[in-house]
Figure 1 (cartoon, rainbow, N blue to C red):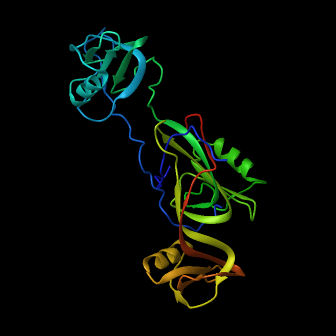
Figure 2 (cartoon, helix red, strand yellow):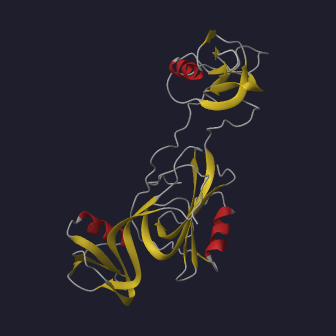
Figure 3 (cartoon, rainbow, N blue to C red):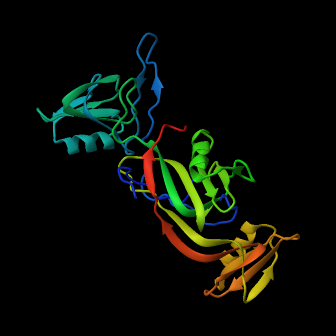
Length: 310
């Protein structure tokens, strides 16, 4: 998805549109860093594929209760944390395992395979072929948000008719190209998205997004820098400003420190009015859409794991 400003985290918790107008970049704070991938090659015809050694640094994939198979390049007795650190810092180390019963650390220049061992802990720079997923591997999750409108990335510019947010979510879930959606309850329109550019607070908006994260990552949050008012205008000290789109009108207000909000008039020709001050209150007006500056952090209603969407 469009990399938004998104804070991502552990999913073992739960809390119990598409209006084309908003700005804020999702912040991805914290922790979806991928492990270095190792290249594979055949050492010579007839020899099984082996992982080549990788540069030092990066991150190791964790395999609890696992012993590696292969020819170790070094064996010595050290605590588990030291064993992991040595492998991580050594450029020729493709993986390690450590026995809790003997305190033996083994370093491997290549990892052929692995086997279950309740007394061993393994770590590798690449997933082990034919073995279960590492404990710290990235997985796909879905997060649901109330009261927000995701702007940009629409797969269908005018949206799709949908009776409720649940049906909109199901439509997005059925398409792997859909990475987010906003359901506008005011007009019963579903906006499926390949990603999004920014976020607005909008009481009648229900949104969801798919993302990848590690189990240890913190919960995702969105930051909405604008509050959206549909069919409304700000009455007051407004100054007309040239703009050809809602987003451009918003950008002009954003760059003006004295601008507290703006009104976008959709009557032809479209017109943009920047409104000064902070005490701005919308008045219902057909053919107008307004937004005011009002930063807010939004936490998800719930998050749960989903099938891969790669």
